Length: 141
Image 1 (tube, rainbow, N blue to C red):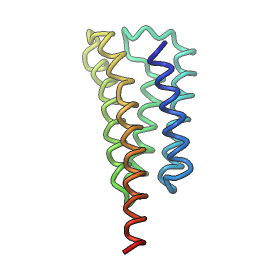
Image 2 (cartoon, helix red, strand yellow):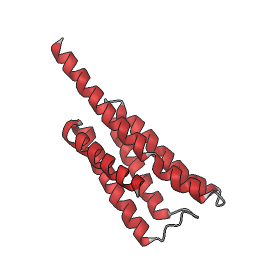
Image 3 (cartoon, helix red, strand yellow):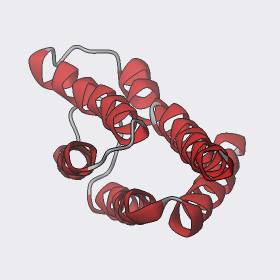
Image 4 (cartoon, helix red, strand yellow):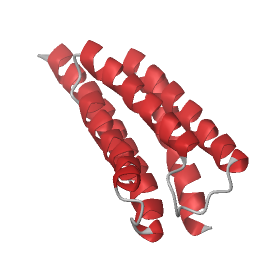
């Protein structure tokens, strides 16, 4: 329960910051994060998620988010979208591990799959902040 509250507080804060101050990259990344979050909740409601086997719907949501983040990273001149995409790649790798090894630990799958949202969002906020500070310094010079 505490992790869920922490996730929602962080996600709403990070996405709000990114949507208002992150340029086009922040707006599109926010749209992806919000869409993926709701897509994951719907997927978990459709399939009884016990983390003992690969959840194909959550895998599809995470893979779609990776593709979206990759597109943003390729088109952006900022550094942080590439790192956010790399963290999302780790979530996709957790799904692939369960496909390649069905005996993969359910506890590890559950923890590893969702873990990467936290550093990805923290890095997104940090990257946007650094970009804004850099632009401000450049304007003063």
